[in-house]
Image (cartoon, rainbow, N blue to C red; front, side, top):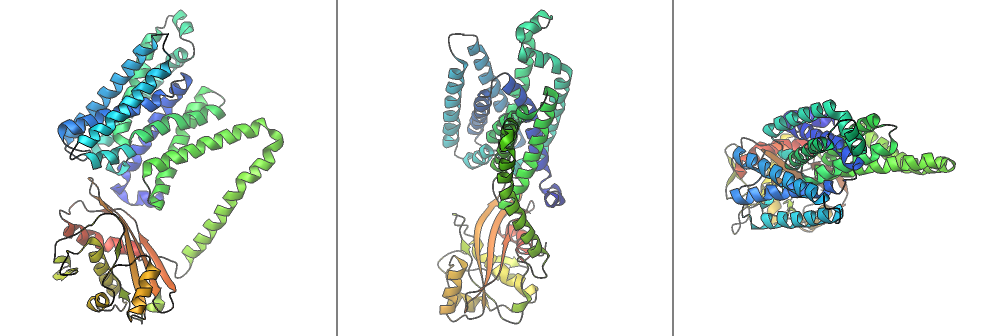
Amino acid sequence: MSELLAAGALFQNAILGGLGVALLCSLLGIYLVLRRLVLIGVALPQASAAGIAAVFWLTGHGHGGSSETHALALAGSLAATFGALALLVVGRRDEGIPAEWGIGVLFAISSAATILFVAINPTGDIEMASLLRGELLTITDADLRVLGSVLFGVGALFFLFRRDLLLTSFDAEFSRTLGRNPVRYDLLLYFLIGGGIALGVITAGPLVVFGFLVLPSLAALRVASGLGSAFAISALLAAASFLGGFALSYQADLPAGPVCVAVAAAGWAASSALVRLRARRGAQALLLLAALVPWLGCASRWSAAAERASAPLPRGTLPESVVSRPIAVLPFANATGQPLRMPQGILVDAGRAIGRGSPDADPTVADVLSERAAAELTRRGFQVLPQEQVRSAVPEAIDPPLAAAGAAARAGLEGPVLAGTLRRFTVTQTGLLLVRLELALVDARSQEVLWTGTARRPVPIRSAQSWQEILLDAGPPIFADAFGNL
């Protein structure tokens, strides 16, 4: 997490915005669980997503559109959420129909509507897909300001009406005898739940909202001694789950939202195990030992990783042993599933055109990155074979690296070869390049892996307007990350 925060504003909005959504949902979730309305936490986020998808379809834009489109999407999220909530509240008055029936119908209709609106939107499907899975990196400054205002308002209302809300949640008839109108406080609670869900969905996605509505509150209520401690434990667990999940998703190059929910689920599982340990005192020692075994294994692996990181030449730093031997930079493989083709004659360094590729096809981003790698190796004092010689010996990209090294050896290249695989290259609407480039330095003759490195840090490219400018801006930090110079 310190590494993420050290990146400055690159992750600031994502961390603060996602943390705000997690805290808001963890507080609202206590009331949902107490009132046995957990299923509403499934249906309302989906209804909110349907409202957002409808606005994107009507406007023809996506999540990265203008501020006006974003405001309309928020309005659509609020309208759909409160409309669905009103239908559920009205439906509960009919005592002959179970509440679960209406929630199931609402969820089915909302899910179908979301998919259909996304399918018929010719321009917003990609952005909508990012929104639905919880692309936290798309949180803007305006989103953060609105979220902060809502958090302040919700916190103030909870503090002012906390006793009345809890009283009506536990015993509506008793609250009526005390002179309080339970309908009024029910409406207030529904207003807080609907507003929080609508804002959370457009900020972090329905999966994050539902996960943090349910998991931290369920875990807190299992282990807390009172309602005050339940709110505190739920908030702390939500904050820890989000921060830990965000850091883990960054390290593993996975979507942040689902990973944060998975960490929250692990917290709920831990609380359930703790309750069982309390109930079965005779099996506490055995269960505790079984729980500690995998953690001890992880600790030993972390210790070994720390020792490798403190070694003079850890993986991620190019080895000095190959300085005197010319390195052949092979064509990089493109494993992104996208062609990533570029116009001919791309300028990757000032005044020098490289990456023309074959005369029959435009070069790809992977081609230009391999050229950039050769230039970066030269800057670091390594000898590099001319690209024309390497391309004549190995004209096509080969994956995995050992297979590429074998092809290079059969073509007469006997020294170390650098093979690369591009697994992600995505430009977000907020001016970030999400990249994952895996590199391996292999001795072509002995097939020994001499070094491996990975570039996976998001790169800010807000001033870039074309593929050429993107690679000009992103090339140095990509290989500084891969070669271990950050």
